[in-house]
Length: 283
Image 1 (cartoon, rainbow, N blue to C red):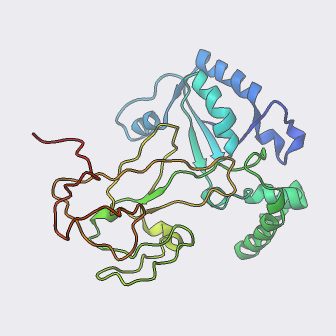
Image 2 (tube, rainbow, N blue to C red):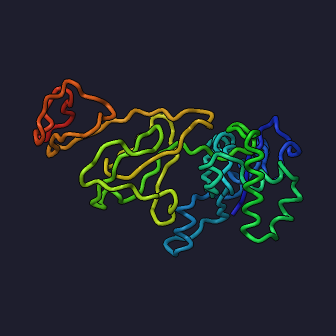
Image 3 (tube, rainbow, N blue to C red):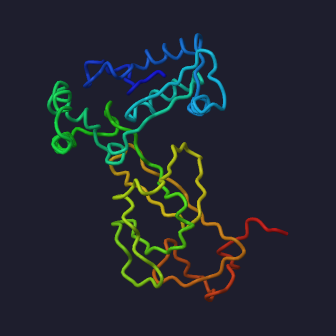
């Protein structure tokens, strides 16, 4: 296993960032990839797991390339280099900094107090360390940007609670603007559980998306996404809703996310209307 952390741009030297030697330069990564391609057999995590669990054997000179923490530079700088050599890699992500869009705790402490403080604080009790590192992250917030060399990955893909469409439960919808429930009564609906506070209790799935990718999911699947105000790019997507021939019209106590002022269906009517064109017919 070959472990990396971040990737430094050619314009960034090791002395420009805390723990600089942990961040391989673009040129060094390219040189390493050339050596791996020539003298080793880079493998993906699936091959690694199959071999560990006895389903197959490791190829000769197998190497698994990994990246710790989850720096944005792995995606923006490292990924194109790896792809040019057709080398797979695994990224182990420290999710808190990614979701909060802040510096990883060790980088925040090093920026605020110096690299030596990071090692000194590792002997502290957890609660004290947690409080001190959060204070450093807050102090360094003004220096953070998504194009900083130490920025974490940006989470732009929505997250889904796997299997939640099978719960047979209906939840009161929340407004996008402030995450507050709509000011009306929803019969048979209940408040959404605080999933964010108990993420470990659920199987939450998400994917790294490229322009043109699509996600298809059952509309009862509990899902959400963080804001992108601090991101370098916005989340842009088009959402479509697909109905089966068993779907019928039902009244909604609030204005839908796309209003249909010309819709004249009655509750229980099949969704046969010019506003809902048929895409595929069984006949």
